[in-house]
Length: 251
Image 1: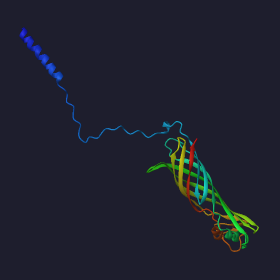
Image 2: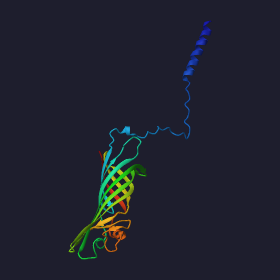
Image 3: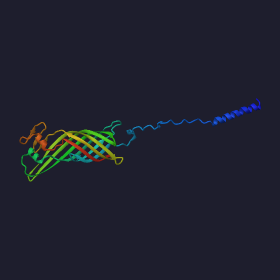
């Protein structure tokens, strides 16, 4: 091969390589209305994400339950992974209206009306609830609850100047439920609000050796009075609305 042909070949290779090096690969233009790619949503937390999660929650609440009420409870939660329910055992006291002191005296003692009547009512209630966590609008930390109730009721009557004092007692079983929501004050302390209602079944009433039973029977009843008269005279719990607020503590 002569020098002229060799020069032509080398020049062609150099020109072609330079042109190829200068050629840029076109970048495709973004498509219009193309949705932006987002990161996949984080998976829901599990119990393993909170190795120090507390099992017990204690609460103390004050409010209204057919009278001024004070209520304490202990809740067992996070029992097992995937088990949504908590178990709550509560005990409370309500200062309530005991009933009509003059009618109570007629039904349980006699028809005397001397003396200035004084009265008070006390309810000690024991309750067991299943707690189920829910979210309602802005209430992100709420629980539905429902369960059994047991109430120990005492109506106390005194007639100042009439030399007469007696108690009327009843023990009622019932059911109830409601909604509770919490707002965090710290990692382990919450402010809680609770609303609900309880329904108690009719109970026998006894006072001053007289007994009146819901089935119509009685012992040592006064005159022709019946259970209906005793129930109207005494304000034993039946359907009670509850509104309470307080604090809870995890331990």
